[in-house]
Length: 195
Length: 195
DNA sequence: TGAGTTATGTACCAAACAGTACAATAGTCA
DNA sequence: TGACTATTGTACTGTTTGGTACATAACTCA
Image (cartoon, rainbow over all chains, first blue to last red):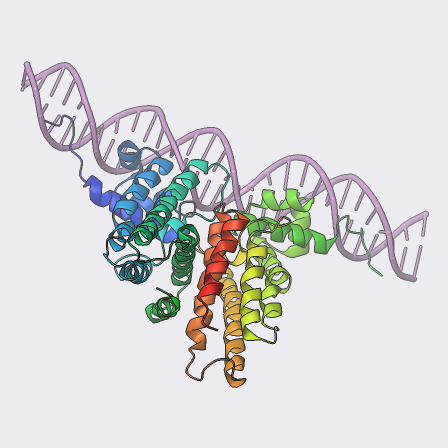
């Protein structure tokens, strides 16, 4: 089957390790040295398997979107819209303050420092975030159609409000907030919900 | 009075220029080249006047705290607590999406990428943020004492909730959100307020 | 076995980075 | 005027960065 010398590492778990490093440090602050030592491989193997740093980040981003960040999609499957919102916020706390991952959110962590030649990186992160936003907004539209929300409900503004809360949770978590502090924010937000 | 060759630049406006660059790019992504060209001086002048990059950032941070970030302190002076909260959020939109400044918030922009030897930077940013949080929480305590809020009101959780919204606004703004989109988030938050 | 193919490890490259040495310059003070 | 002092501009240093050349090793296929 596969010709040539076989790989001594598993491509998927190496990508997971790279994702974790990017999650913790962001794209620009992560060095190739950080990546190779976390992935357990050396530089030429990294470049041969994943292209360059940018290309590796895009692969890690895709993995993040379908793994850790899938909690958004899952939460929106709740049949009642209030349960969907609650699960969205609680799962955001889990994501932003999990024991098995870095703190915060990869999308927030890598988005802010706007370096010079990182336009593609930022457009990809923006796309991932936009995807989450659209998913939430669509769920609110569905709730309007099902009569759970009034007809004049502003789905776009509300979805953006939830995204702001989620980003805020990610920022506070990355800054060292405790799990209890994040949970207290969610409790306040849920208590305020007029739904 | 001042001996030696006189400065050809104004120290305060140079510091303002440096603050703007840090605001836009964050600490780590900002290079000395970025700073000197924005400040209109050359490298030795920068080091002679402000120490090193870290020391310059701390001075810029102090200037930010007493300038742009003073909107928090100002908002909390509103006599009625609901007005204080409203002014806090609206002024955050102004700060995060002003025409004369970069988008976003310096504290959020420079806080996330956790580099290696930047502990002092992060502790200083954390301190500045903590100061804003404490100011908001104290204002809520005052409202409880004045009878504007119920006695079992959780000031700490609510202050953290507001901080999360503000950070979320900063993230969305830095990511390219329009002013109207930020305003729509604030409208939702204010409509939900049970105060 | 041996040709072909792919991965590995060392050692390297050019560019960008923060920070500085040093001579020249432009003022103040006596 | 001349000694003194502080800033300026050029050119440099050592280090770290992303990325790669090249020889060697390990596998498949005929």
